[in-house]
Length: 169
Image (cartoon, rainbow, N blue to C red):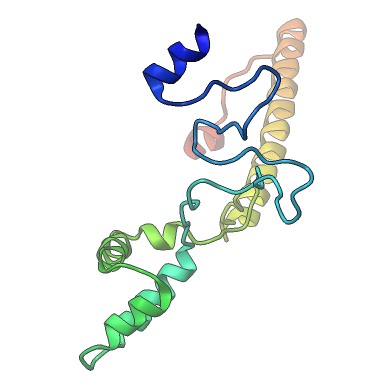
């Protein structure tokens, strides 16, 4: 009864159990078997999309110099085709060059920046040492004067300045 039912509705004879005809995949291809020579699985390392290009500041400045040197009609187009660039690249790079951004991107020496040495630094250091030496000498002199005042008080000697000391002060 089943045989007649399938053949009447679809017009196809039913497939006997255990027998398979080449089953198809949803993509429409036939299943790959190990026996088929020349068939290998696709490489999983292939990038789906091209990576974005990155241009160095040096390259940009070189292309801008070449573009500025183009004087005849068609030279600029040939340059752009040769390098695989668009005119919008030149527009953006020219703006960056005017703003000084391309110079800022150029490689620099790494590490701490060297401080500019003051040409007067050795003289300043010498004067500071001399100033400190004179301060110490003045402090010693003040201590000696204080001791002399105390001794004169103990001994009862008057401390009135003489005429020559008054004229000098």
